[in-house]
Length: 335
Figure 1 (spheres, rainbow, N blue to C red):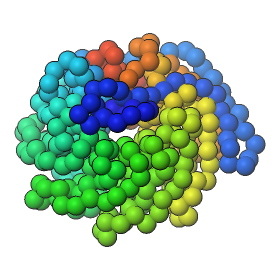
Figure 2: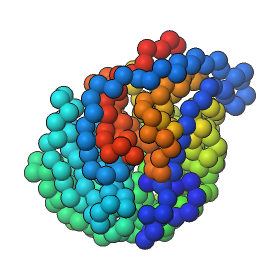
Figure 3: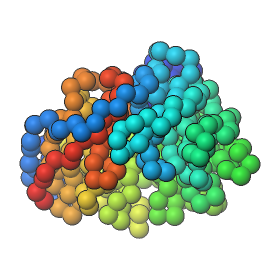
Figure 4: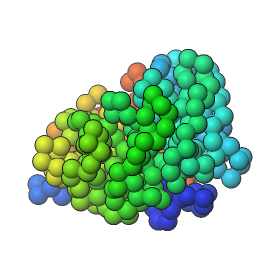
């Protein structure tokens, strides 16, 4: 439920934020990359009804897990577990107030409850909440590293470490202003700092920031792909590529949507989901070429992050305004 402006906390119910569609260029010093465009709406293979305001999504334990924020509908949120083979709902699991994001780590599913300052741990074997862990103000992004689960504390400008054995938050690490999302990759924890316009790289064992990387305005989602860390900057708008060997930005790709947000890797390409539809763009990580946009639906501009996952060669995309998650056939593209 990332917002482009203010904070969430107790008023998480004030704003969420995101994206659109576009063409392609590169600002890494090379000539602008050419892009293809295909405005035809992508075929939807399955529609699956969820709870109100679906936002967070992950694929784990043979299932799709969708966080239903129940934004302005119910006091408590839920998680819908979906069988990707036939779209059947395997379970609906109540969690905390205004849940936002979800991640798989330490044999469990973890959900951040932004209005409760808590994280729910779900046992995939029972589809029940095994623990509710008090954490910090406005918890949002989640990520796992060996022996730890990390939760981004947006209002505290920190990221907190949860010990999955004791099910307690054991400490925090100061990061930048208004952190949003986290990624465990290349032996580190990466945190996007939305207001500051930076990415913090943390040594998860020492619990210390080892690099702060300046990026474009409004960094949100991150993805490890093709040996690099990719970050979507919704306010810029741009998608940037960070070299984990040098901790520097190696490329800035513009026009992958007016507010690029969700990122996922499929068939060697980086795919970007953006609002106003939503729409998809495809980035060729070798050439830096951006293809698209491809409209997915017509739900208008939403007030939440537009995320997606890839499972068995297809995309699963939550539609916040339509209270459903849809399975999408990827478009045919040329490199």
